[in-house]
Every structure is written in structure tokens, then in C-alpha cells.
Image (cartoon, rainbow, N blue to C red):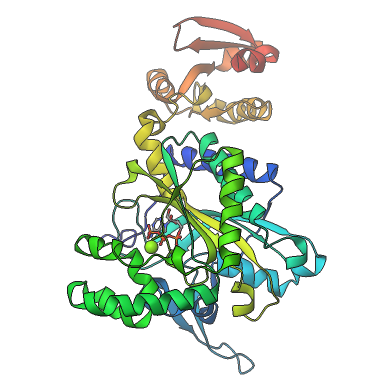
Length: 430
Ligand code: ATP
Ligand code: MG
């Protein structure tokens, strides 16, 4: 029988690498708490219609990357339903905001999530079919100040702080405004007209986009198209006064806070729901997949999926890409902290296995990390096993059990000592 493997584009995360994942997640949770965000966990799958209506029918995500299936009805009272593994989490968060009437509190809702997302993309370094995102959303009724440019600036400042605390160096914040939906409609017309004369020279995907969704041409990755795209009219020239003022207030607040950014008029992002501020944090160490995170404002999203007016702004960072970046800049991150275990307990003979379990229980309850050997091991084998994982070995023989005096060997110093059981935990903690 052929051996089964993890599905293409998915992977197992193993220790010690998972320690790095946990550390990143813990840092994110700590920083989010300081900015008064609470955690939200939404289901991994949702009604397909949610993504079609929020992310947008014409986007790559919805048109070709979603894992969608028809879920059969189990009973007469149920209908079969088209379901989709979430390709992103903002749609689910906004759906939950509407479903639980979170806006009725009159307060801003500040929610973060950490979890897997699914897209059927071509797998490559930094691009997987199951990948992880850490994201956050600030959403609420306009009366709660959810439209304020200060919210945009605060989210961007938080991200700069988070990346600094993660020790990710050399990131760039790229910033743009895609304006209101009216601005975008106007710009789409300008762009459609400008694309007609160049259409024969652009890639097949862009030729299609030029008709269906011209804005999408701007995030084309095909090398040959770049010079042509750079010569197209800029979205910033199609913004109305309100959008211009909003953007100016965001950049002024960032300047005041000392958060550096680079204006990128081509940054329109791959999801249809964005309005006004859009941004990405990029990093040179990632190669082609250079975006660490992306986000923006989505003032019309709640209404697009049947909810009340609830402007918001959010972002999603690629956890897989954060890990890759840290591994490339700090190579020792890749290795485990060797000898992470405080003590290895070696029972001398199978009769001592139960007593060894009791001793391990004592030490673990005292907060120590303990690896438990086995009485069937020869002493030499115990030493070899212990030396690979632990800082010290504790020998538990019949004599030690009776006298309550244990033999401890420290591998770093090579020193062997006798320690009374009552003092063992304190000694091992040193
Ligand atoms: P890209 O341009 O790299 O495809 P995107 O614009 O599709 O990114 P978003 O949908 O905004 O990305 O998702 C936010 C972040 O999630 C990205 O910046 C990236 O770090 C991460 N991400 C997106 N797709 C993948 C993937 N297939 N594998 C790993 N990480 C991903
Ligand atoms: Mg993408």
C-alpha cells in the first residue's frame, strides 16, 4: 500500500519549531491585550455565500482558491448547503459581529484571532494551502468613532510595535488609500479606459481583469507587465476630498508617532471589501512571498453581508511567514533549546517504575520538567538517553528509595552528588 502523506500544500509542525510558533503567538496575545483587544474564535467553515459577498466573486480567492463542498442534509428539516473552509477570517468576524449584535453596545469592538486559513494556491516557500493567520479587527457603529483615521493609525502603530517585539527587523510599511466605493468605481472606469490601448501587451489574466475588475490588474505579479502597470493612472488622483483628508490624517498621526511608511499607489489588495486605507508590511528576507501581513479599512463590509453600518479596519499576518523570517534572521531559532528538561529519572529495575512515577509526579508538581526513564533500561542506556535531553540524571534504586537520599549527576559539570529527597526539587531548579 502506498504510504499516506500530508496533502500537498499542508504540513506538520513539529517540536522544536512549534516552540517558535508558540512564542510568536504569546507575544501577539500580550501586545493585543495592551491595546485592549479580546480574542474571537469563529468556525473554520462558513456558508460559501459569506465569502462570495465579502471577499468578492471576481477575486482570485473566491473564483479559484476556495475549498467548497455541498454539505448534504441529514434530515428532512435540513437543507443541503454549500460550505467553504475559510480562506480568511475577516468575513467570519464581521458575520459574528452582526449575528451577536455587537454594535448595539455602542462601543468599538476590538477583536483578534489566531488560526488556520485555507486557499488552493500553488504551494511554494511561504505559500501553503493551509496556512495560519494572526489578525485583528476594530469595528463598530460610526458613533463609536469607528471611521476615525486615528483608528487606522493606532492599528498601524500597534503592528510596528508587535513586529519590533517579535524582533523582526527591516520591515517596510507600504501604505495607500483606495478611497470610498464611489472613488473606486470612478477609478475603475479611468483604468478600464487606460487599459484598452495596452491590453494586447499584458498577460492573459490581466486582459480578463481589464474587463471584469480593472483594479485587480494593479496587483499582477507577472514581471513583463510591471512597466505598463506603473504607467497607468494612479488611484490617489481619483480620490474625493473626504478620502484625501482621511488619508492625510492617517499619515499625520503616523508621522507624529514616528512610524515610518512608504506610499505605494499600486497597493489595492486582493480582496474587494477594502475602502480607503490599505497597507502591507513587507520583508526582504521572504523572496517572492514578501508580504508579512496585509490589511485595510472596510467601511461597507458589514452592510454588504446584510448588517448595520459598521465601519472597521483590520489586518492579517501570515504566521508561517513570520516563522520563516525569524528562522532566516536568527538561525538559532531553528534549533531547540537543547537539554530543555531539568531532570531525567532513571529507575534501576522494573520494580522501581511505580516509585519513579511518584517521584516524577512530585517534581513536576513542583514546576520542573522531567523525563521519566524505564526500569528495563541498563544504567548505561539511561545515561545515554538522559544526556541527550536533560541537564541532570536522578538515579532511583532500592537504596535511594529506602534512604530517601538520591544520586544526581550534573552533565555540564560532570559532578555527582547525593541529595535528600526533600531538597531535590530546589536543587534541580537551580
Ligand atoms: P499574497 O500577495 O502573498 O498572496 P495576500 O494579499 O493574498 O498575500 P492576504 O489575503 O491579505 O494576503 O493575507 C494576509 C497575509 O496572510 C499575507 O500577507 C501573508 O503573510 C499571509 N498569506 C496569505 N496567503 C498565504 C498562503 N497561501 N500561505 C501562507 N501565508 C499566506
Ligand atoms: Mg494571495
